[in-house]
Image (cartoon, rainbow, N blue to C red; front, side, top):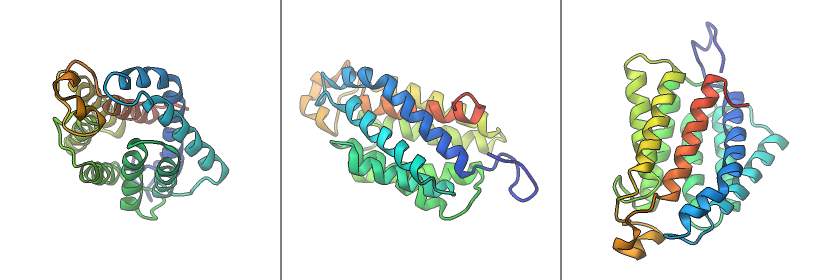
Amino acid sequence: MSEGPSTGPAAIDAGFVRRWLAAAASVIEREADRLTELDSPIGDADHGANMRRGFIAARTAVEKEPPDTPGGVLVLVGRQLISTVGGASGPLYGTLLRKAGKALGDAEHVTPEQFAAALGAGVDAVATLGGAAPGDKTMVDALAPAVEALSFALDKGAGLAEALSAAAMAAEEGAIATTPLVAHKGRASYLGERSVGHQDPGATSSALLLGVLAMTSRGDAG
Protein backbone atom coordinates (compact mmCIF):
# COMPACT_ATOMS: atom_id res chain seq x y z
CA MET A 1 0.00 0.00 0.00
CA SER A 2 1.06 3.59 -0.42
CA GLU A 3 -0.05 7.06 0.52
CA GLY A 4 0.34 10.29 -1.37
CA PRO A 5 -1.47 12.98 -3.31
CA SER A 6 -1.50 10.96 -6.50
CA THR A 7 -2.95 7.78 -5.07
CA GLY A 8 -4.86 8.90 -1.99
CA PRO A 9 -4.65 7.24 1.41
CA ALA A 10 -4.24 3.50 1.68
CA ALA A 11 -4.04 2.88 -2.06
CA ILE A 12 -3.49 -0.80 -2.79
CA ASP A 13 -0.61 -1.66 -5.10
CA ALA A 14 0.85 -4.84 -6.57
CA GLY A 15 3.25 -5.24 -3.67
CA PHE A 16 0.39 -5.44 -1.20
CA VAL A 17 -1.40 -8.13 -3.22
CA ARG A 18 1.84 -10.07 -3.69
CA ARG A 19 2.49 -10.01 0.05
CA TRP A 20 -1.06 -11.17 0.75
CA LEU A 21 -0.90 -14.12 -1.60
CA ALA A 22 2.61 -15.14 -0.56
CA ALA A 23 1.51 -15.14 3.08
CA ALA A 24 -1.66 -17.00 2.09
CA ALA A 25 0.44 -19.74 0.51
CA SER A 26 2.36 -20.13 3.77
CA VAL A 27 -0.82 -20.30 5.84
CA ILE A 28 -2.45 -22.79 3.48
CA GLU A 29 0.69 -24.92 3.64
CA ARG A 30 0.57 -24.85 7.44
CA GLU A 31 -3.17 -25.56 7.62
CA ALA A 32 -3.33 -28.13 4.81
CA ASP A 33 -3.70 -31.13 7.11
CA ARG A 34 -6.57 -29.48 8.98
CA LEU A 35 -8.34 -28.66 5.71
CA THR A 36 -7.96 -32.25 4.57
CA GLU A 37 -9.26 -33.48 7.92
CA LEU A 38 -12.37 -31.31 7.46
CA ASP A 39 -12.75 -32.63 3.92
CA SER A 40 -12.45 -36.30 4.87
CA PRO A 41 -16.00 -36.91 6.17
CA ILE A 42 -17.83 -34.95 3.48
CA GLY A 43 -15.48 -34.74 0.48
CA ASP A 44 -12.59 -36.48 -1.19
CA ALA A 45 -10.06 -35.85 1.60
CA ASP A 46 -7.85 -33.82 -0.71
CA HIS A 47 -8.78 -30.17 -0.17
CA GLY A 48 -5.73 -29.34 1.90
CA ALA A 49 -3.28 -31.09 -0.40
CA ASN A 50 -4.83 -29.52 -3.49
CA MET A 51 -4.83 -26.02 -2.04
CA ARG A 52 -1.26 -26.37 -0.82
CA ARG A 53 -0.05 -27.48 -4.25
CA GLY A 54 -1.92 -24.69 -6.01
CA PHE A 55 -0.84 -21.84 -3.77
CA ILE A 56 2.79 -22.93 -3.72
CA ALA A 57 2.76 -23.02 -7.52
CA ALA A 58 1.10 -19.61 -7.62
CA ARG A 59 3.65 -18.13 -5.22
CA THR A 60 6.48 -19.48 -7.35
CA ALA A 61 4.95 -18.02 -10.52
CA VAL A 62 4.57 -14.59 -8.92
CA GLU A 63 8.13 -14.65 -7.60
CA LYS A 64 9.46 -15.62 -11.03
CA GLU A 65 7.71 -12.85 -12.94
CA PRO A 66 6.00 -10.47 -10.48
CA PRO A 67 3.19 -8.49 -12.13
CA ASP A 68 3.31 -4.74 -11.53
CA THR A 69 -0.42 -4.17 -10.98
CA PRO A 70 -2.82 -5.54 -8.34
CA GLY A 71 -5.06 -6.90 -11.05
CA GLY A 72 -2.16 -8.58 -12.78
CA VAL A 73 -1.14 -10.41 -9.62
CA LEU A 74 -4.67 -11.67 -9.03
CA VAL A 75 -5.10 -12.84 -12.62
CA LEU A 76 -1.78 -14.70 -12.59
CA VAL A 77 -2.54 -16.43 -9.29
CA GLY A 78 -6.03 -17.31 -10.46
CA ARG A 79 -4.65 -18.83 -13.64
CA GLN A 80 -2.15 -20.90 -11.66
CA LEU A 81 -4.82 -22.18 -9.30
CA ILE A 82 -7.01 -23.30 -12.17
CA SER A 83 -4.14 -25.22 -13.73
CA THR A 84 -2.69 -26.82 -10.59
CA VAL A 85 -5.47 -27.30 -7.99
CA GLY A 86 -7.44 -30.50 -8.39
CA GLY A 87 -11.15 -30.99 -7.92
CA ALA A 88 -13.62 -28.13 -7.84
CA SER A 89 -11.39 -25.86 -5.76
CA GLY A 90 -9.11 -24.89 -8.65
CA PRO A 91 -11.81 -23.50 -10.94
CA LEU A 92 -13.62 -21.84 -8.03
CA TYR A 93 -10.63 -20.13 -6.42
CA GLY A 94 -9.16 -19.40 -9.82
CA THR A 95 -12.40 -17.76 -10.91
CA LEU A 96 -12.55 -15.75 -7.69
CA LEU A 97 -9.12 -14.21 -8.18
CA ARG A 98 -9.14 -13.90 -11.97
CA LYS A 99 -12.51 -12.15 -11.97
CA ALA A 100 -11.36 -9.80 -9.21
CA GLY A 101 -8.14 -9.10 -11.09
CA LYS A 102 -9.91 -8.37 -14.33
CA ALA A 103 -12.29 -6.04 -12.50
CA LEU A 104 -9.28 -4.02 -11.30
CA GLY A 105 -7.90 -3.72 -14.82
CA ASP A 106 -4.44 -2.25 -15.40
CA ALA A 107 -4.44 0.33 -12.62
CA GLU A 108 -1.19 0.47 -10.65
CA HIS A 109 -3.02 1.63 -7.52
CA VAL A 110 -6.62 0.97 -6.51
CA THR A 111 -8.70 2.30 -3.66
CA PRO A 112 -10.06 0.07 -0.91
CA GLU A 113 -13.51 0.60 -2.37
CA GLN A 114 -12.35 -0.58 -5.80
CA PHE A 115 -10.69 -3.58 -4.22
CA ALA A 116 -13.88 -4.45 -2.34
CA ALA A 117 -15.95 -4.14 -5.51
CA ALA A 118 -13.49 -6.40 -7.35
CA LEU A 119 -13.69 -9.03 -4.63
CA GLY A 120 -17.46 -8.78 -4.83
CA ALA A 121 -17.32 -9.43 -8.56
CA GLY A 122 -15.14 -12.46 -7.87
CA VAL A 123 -17.54 -13.84 -5.29
CA ASP A 124 -20.48 -13.35 -7.66
CA ALA A 125 -18.58 -15.27 -10.33
CA VAL A 126 -17.88 -18.11 -7.90
CA ALA A 127 -21.55 -18.29 -6.92
CA THR A 128 -22.55 -18.42 -10.57
CA LEU A 129 -19.98 -21.05 -11.48
CA GLY A 130 -20.86 -23.30 -8.57
CA GLY A 131 -24.57 -22.52 -8.59
CA ALA A 132 -24.26 -21.82 -4.88
CA ALA A 133 -25.96 -19.34 -2.57
CA PRO A 134 -25.41 -18.53 1.10
CA GLY A 135 -26.71 -21.43 3.16
CA ASP A 136 -25.66 -24.13 0.70
CA LYS A 137 -22.61 -25.09 2.81
CA THR A 138 -19.90 -23.90 0.43
CA MET A 139 -17.12 -21.32 0.29
CA VAL A 140 -19.80 -18.75 -0.56
CA ASP A 141 -20.94 -18.93 3.06
CA ALA A 142 -17.63 -17.36 4.08
CA LEU A 143 -16.97 -15.14 1.06
CA ALA A 144 -20.36 -13.44 0.71
CA PRO A 145 -20.59 -12.11 4.29
CA ALA A 146 -16.93 -11.08 4.14
CA VAL A 147 -17.46 -8.88 1.11
CA GLU A 148 -20.64 -7.48 2.63
CA ALA A 149 -18.83 -6.63 5.87
CA LEU A 150 -15.91 -5.09 3.97
CA SER A 151 -18.13 -2.83 1.89
CA PHE A 152 -20.26 -1.87 4.89
CA ALA A 153 -17.21 -0.92 6.95
CA LEU A 154 -15.72 1.16 4.15
CA ASP A 155 -19.05 2.92 3.60
CA LYS A 156 -19.03 3.84 7.30
CA GLY A 157 -15.62 5.42 6.97
CA ALA A 158 -13.42 2.63 8.30
CA GLY A 159 -9.82 2.42 7.19
CA LEU A 160 -8.61 -0.49 5.10
CA ALA A 161 -7.15 -2.49 8.00
CA GLU A 162 -10.27 -2.07 10.11
CA ALA A 163 -12.56 -2.95 7.21
CA LEU A 164 -10.56 -6.04 6.29
CA SER A 165 -10.56 -7.16 9.91
CA ALA A 166 -14.36 -6.95 9.84
CA ALA A 167 -14.37 -8.97 6.64
CA ALA A 168 -12.10 -11.61 8.14
CA MET A 169 -14.32 -11.92 11.20
CA ALA A 170 -17.41 -12.28 9.02
CA ALA A 171 -15.70 -14.96 6.93
CA GLU A 172 -14.67 -16.92 10.02
CA GLU A 173 -18.18 -16.71 11.46
CA GLY A 174 -19.61 -17.78 8.11
CA ALA A 175 -17.31 -20.79 7.94
CA ILE A 176 -18.20 -21.91 11.46
CA ALA A 177 -21.89 -21.44 10.68
CA THR A 178 -21.69 -24.08 7.93
CA THR A 179 -21.33 -26.83 10.55
CA PRO A 180 -25.06 -27.40 11.23
CA LEU A 181 -26.08 -26.92 7.59
CA VAL A 182 -27.12 -29.58 5.09
CA ALA A 183 -24.92 -29.37 2.01
CA HIS A 184 -26.79 -28.55 -1.19
CA LYS A 185 -23.84 -28.21 -3.57
CA GLY A 186 -20.61 -30.03 -4.25
CA ARG A 187 -19.41 -33.44 -3.19
CA ALA A 188 -20.86 -33.02 0.31
CA SER A 189 -24.39 -32.69 -1.10
CA TYR A 190 -24.35 -36.41 -1.94
CA LEU A 191 -24.43 -37.12 1.79
CA GLY A 192 -27.62 -35.20 2.44
CA GLU A 193 -28.39 -35.05 6.17
CA ARG A 194 -25.11 -36.82 6.95
CA SER A 195 -23.27 -33.62 5.98
CA VAL A 196 -24.68 -31.96 9.11
CA GLY A 197 -22.15 -31.50 11.89
CA HIS A 198 -19.14 -30.92 9.64
CA GLN A 199 -17.60 -27.52 8.91
CA ASP A 200 -17.23 -26.93 5.20
CA PRO A 201 -13.56 -27.10 4.13
CA GLY A 202 -13.99 -24.62 1.28
CA ALA A 203 -15.56 -22.05 3.57
CA THR A 204 -12.72 -22.69 6.01
CA SER A 205 -9.97 -22.12 3.44
CA SER A 206 -11.79 -18.98 2.27
CA ALA A 207 -11.81 -17.68 5.82
CA LEU A 208 -8.08 -18.38 6.06
CA LEU A 209 -7.44 -16.26 2.97
CA LEU A 210 -9.52 -13.39 4.34
CA GLY A 211 -7.74 -13.65 7.66
CA VAL A 212 -4.35 -13.37 5.96
CA LEU A 213 -5.62 -10.42 3.92
CA ALA A 214 -6.51 -8.59 7.12
CA MET A 215 -3.12 -9.44 8.62
CA THR A 216 -1.37 -8.11 5.54
CA SER A 217 -3.21 -4.80 5.81
CA ARG A 218 -2.01 -4.49 9.41
CA GLY A 219 1.55 -5.32 8.47
CA ASP A 220 1.41 -8.64 10.33
CA ALA A 221 2.08 -10.78 7.26
CA GLY A 222 5.31 -10.74 5.33
